[in-house]
Length: 579
Ligand SMILES: Nc1nc2c(c(=O)[nH]1)N[C@H]1C(S)=C(S)[C@@H](COP(=O)(O)OP(=O)(O)OC[C@H]3O[C@@H](n4cnc5c(=O)[nH]c(N)nc54)[C@H](O)[C@@H]3O)O[C@H]1N2
Ligand SMILES: Nc1nc2c(c(=O)[nH]1)N[C@H]1C(S)=C(S)[C@@H](COP(=O)(O)OP(=O)(O)OC[C@H]3O[C@@H](n4cnc5c(=O)[nH]c(N)nc54)[C@H](O)[C@@H]3O)O[C@H]1N2
Ligand SMILES: [Mo]
Image (cartoon, rainbow, N blue to C red; front, top):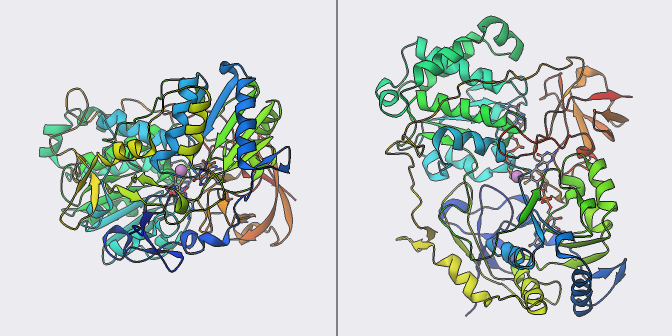
């Protein structure tokens, strides 16, 4: 009998467990999915997928498309081929194509458009990035949402936070901020100051966990000295935080189980690593690591504890600023770089100079529009896979629900190419079994990744000396031109980055006087975007907001890397509005 269980494939904290029933995805009742799905999955079949391969805009059959692909690759020097794979589907078999391209001698990517700066900061401090899971967050008394918007991006956390004390640190009055006990509507890109001042006042208040610090973070006094370099009054005024608010946070966390739940919002900046490390340091001063219901949650490594069965050794260029024009053939999979990479004008120009663009995806978008060869992928319902999450330790087997004539799976495409170019490749079951061998079954018949600790850092940190390594210096975030707006680019409720229903507005506080419904030109050093205005009085009046996935947004962003972590820095771009 067919196994009706699978998982949502999307790049999201929640990684929901699904039962396919009555021809639609329905949520698993027990476990972290808690009987509900988000709008993306509830309306999954509403979104029109690509039905047929295309070559130069004309529909062709799949066999023909594969032969075209073989022809294109045969006529390109291996060193002139780039494989650019994004986050459209988060399951592990997406990597099957890496095996072909790496073995073939093509170039792959490194770097990240997502969480890399924050992760780098975590690794610098703790020696590894082991996450606080959703089930541990559920045990906390106090939750500090720091640059994270759970109503939109991780709605399965919400029922777990009921009845807890909630603090939100976000320049936007998000839904969670509106219901929080305390919302600090901080100026963007100033969290490092708040984190350091919180630590400083915790120490002044004699409220640090001294015993913990002596054991696991003996350099704390030096860090405390670093925090003393910050001028209190001027800084607090500048970042719009009051001493009263700092006092309240310290009061709220006293003697409590505290979870600091961070998102990517704090680290879309060049110094994103330092920001995360300063937030971690506050967690360390409170002694939050290695204890039940306590810790700092971020995006963990979803592949921790799992080795890849695929070839991955390859020359790599960065996902953030890949120069497509350096390649003759670019194979793009599960990504929409023309929308989601920073500096879209540069990307468009660069892509237009590569001779063959092959797009392998589910949906039409800016990138499929410019592709010479479009190959439709199979939906997650039509292929077997396995997935893990960056917010919990479950491993979920994704069973194929029904056959479809449309598209090709990543495995089948990689198999075709490996056969065509005589590269060794095992059966699909071999690879699925490889991934499944890292799973361990619990008493409720659910699987999780073997060896992952529910409460990491119990015996100290994974640094060389086992201690937390504090920041020893930090760059003050540049206070650029105050006449320009901060550009905030969070995630939208109706889209998953550029998939599904994409937003199309620029949001501004009504007091700024831009008329709703009129088009304005938003302009940065990188370029301009013409967008319709909508008011949002949950914003500060020094910020404008454009959701990730909005067409034109990344014309405004720069393709510089973060200082650590090889990450994009989508929010370090001040903008003006021209009416
Ligand atoms: N519906 C939906 N869900 C998604 C996604 C989606 O596109 N749509 N994307 C998925 C992906 S790829 C990811 S990486 C995750 C990300 O999930 P989140 O981490 O929640 O991501 P964001 O919405 O980008 O940012 C979170 C919050 O950071 C705030 N913020 C912005 N700048 C600052 C700042 O300088 N300081 C502080 N303190 N806060 C700031 C924003 O206002 C926002 O409320 O979500 C995943 N889930
Ligand atoms: N300004 C700004 N830019 C951002 C962000 C931001 O917050 N602000 N967020 C960044 C972040 S965190 C991320 S993760 C990136 C995401 O950016 P991308 O990695 O480009 O992801 P998506 O926009 O989701 O587009 C993925 C494409 O994958 C394809 N796809 C979906 N499922 C499958 C499948 O099963 N197989 C194949 N072959 N293809 C599939 C779909 O056709 C879809 O169009 O965007 C980044 N860009
Ligand atoms: Mo992301």
